[in-house]
Image (cartoon, each protein chain N blue to C red):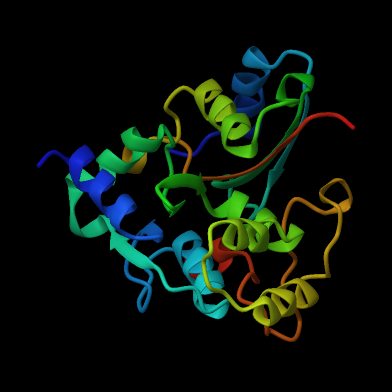
Length: 150
Length: 80
């Protein structure tokens, strides 16, 4: 099977798939860790694919979605976005809507907790482009992964 | 190889001449950047389409371990 076939099968057979560096138990990059952390915190069942374990998939997934970075989230076979988009969608509530539309089980309470800890549901135009670190350290979105992983 | 913020802005500017572009050095190390791009062309596009267009403007600088640009956080939107 080509990488494209393998990817197509994976995203078709699993409702929610995260292509990431490392695994959901042990992410190896701050950006992957952030998205996996959000999904774990929200109780979403998802298939993780470690791109570091397979160079053909690592390149293949970028070609598949025409998207140059990892992580990449797929819901019902559709590419949803990378770390920045998932962060925005989590805070705006769009991720909740996406899961609801697609019949994916998730914890609304957990999603609200993430939003509370990150300054609540704020219109995108009023929000700083970055999620500020939460002084209570409760939210999976903060601090920015770059500062944590290096 | 790190990239300068002005270089990132110039690449985006070449594709989006009328955009409002804000580049921020997140970690102060010249290696972790954030770019906010506001452009009328984005109206009617979803976030994936918007950011794909910005990545395309960066012409492969984000590509893998050999890319010049290690980390770029993107925010894209159409003007209000």
